Length: 255
Ligand code: SAH
Image (cartoon, rainbow, N blue to C red):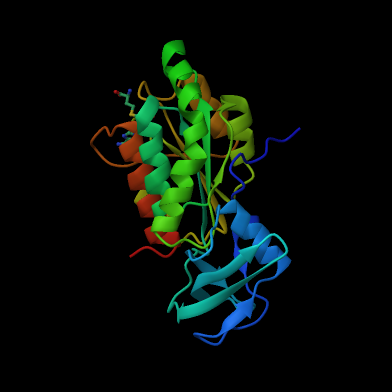
């Protein structure tokens, strides 16, 4: 069975309008939009980013929200799409406690579409894993807050913590497959991205102890290119955030 996302993120969280709205006019919301709004835990009076059928993005204010219907006013048309056309997925070896929350928040801001935590062969100790499990109920909330704050139109998908085999397998269907490796990488991330226009990019980020050599070998066999972020050894959360920014700059909408 393939794992499913735990936070109701992804395309179903996109708030779609049935027609192009006139600004400052109240419009009814479709059943589809209402379903998406439940994923955002929306309440009456709150403001969200929605998309119309031709792909223009709007800021909308909810003027009515009931079980059987809702209404909203679009008050601003956004000059550029809120969601990146580049689908960036980060597969992150679980760091200790709060550091993963920082990663969730920052990757959401940077427009990452999917975040998959995994246990690497060199991941944290059992105690640390326990601490992570106790806090994992907070993760969807961290993403939700960040997505609202930075005005995203879609919630990134958060997957449950996986083992290395499941995570690398899930990532291996991406068009561009990269593994952040602080040593032995022949290419830098910059070099690997030159001339690439991938629809879907997957990036593997290792634990504090670095990837295990067997993981590096597995990844190479699955077509992942090991890439370096330059001469300094970054903490895993810095590596994830910096690499997401570089990816979004090179193939997406940051810059
Ligand atoms: N234990 C290693 C460092 C691991 S850093 C050592 O001390 O040698 C944690 C993770 O961040 C790594 O597994 C890698 O995925 C990523 N990372 C950190 N710095 C990097 C760099 N300069 N280039 C590529 N990846 C890096």
